[in-house]
Image (cartoon, rainbow, N blue to C red; front, side):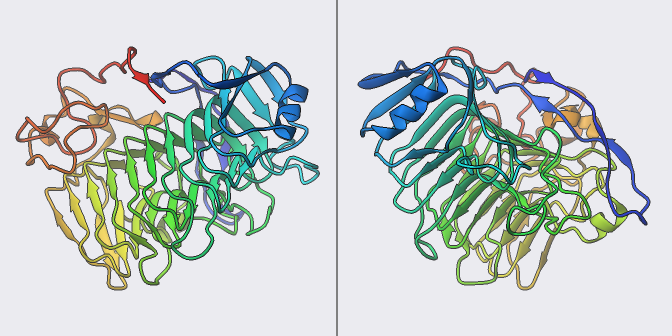
Length: 432
């Protein structure tokens, strides 16, 4: 379904005294097929060089679109956006004709470029471009900001979090963010140096205290730290510190130490509510050492996130994790249904939930291209098709195909309708 460029790099996992496997861990992905945006209107500033981009930062006005011509912009400073309703947009419709390049994710001599973009203003839009090789965060969103919309991006090789949203206080952060149609990836693994927080301290999207975020139609790849790192279990999507109402849907996760975490700490509603649905999560066989697997919990975790729904996800751990889904602390009122899994659902420390209509018969032979986390069903996967009742909480599948008028429906993220996989839409348009 998605064009990819694959280069194979072999890397040993684990300490010197461990018996480790050698596995391919690098897949550099092309842009995702994002629907075209409407033409920009209003105050448009055309940018053709990095110097012009930095000059625009010095006189930035609200309600402005910075329209960047195709090219590589080696940043001399982080782009500090402090005016409301600013759009930073690549002129082309793909995610990598415009590339914003930092000083290197391992380069502690980063000078004026700790981040790619930094904002504390409402209404930031970042569209149709790449941000690569920054020492700390690709996009830093601080208190005062609201409703950021990140669309058709390629975020690669950040030293800490790719998208970081900080709070004023517990439960009081940046609300209404959207991250969609974007690739967030390490092309040769996370950094091995300590950037603050210990080695291996990274996430794809890390939101503190934010309400009603939507994270959909993205690809998260290679958020997998070495066994020697201080941080071994970083979620690619981490919603916590009083966040609520998050929707995570229709994403692919490949070789991530954890895919999705709603809540992380035992406190009153570290996260509350929200939905996790129609995601595809896959691991390369033999990615983890035996010791890593023994210490694992799950790829989807609810740790103090009551009233949360987990519906129609497909998880292929390929023997790397002890569980597919885990609930911990206060998860009362949470429901797990219609998922296609290859590892158990578990709970501890008081985690409570209702689970039904889940299949644990997942295996690589069911899927179109599990090596790139494309877990669309094959025609021969009849054992998991037409098996469960449809749910009002998941009326469409990973591709937007309608489930609501089909009964029974298939386990997992993909509803098989005769195409493996269906072609992505090419004629849709997102209107601002």
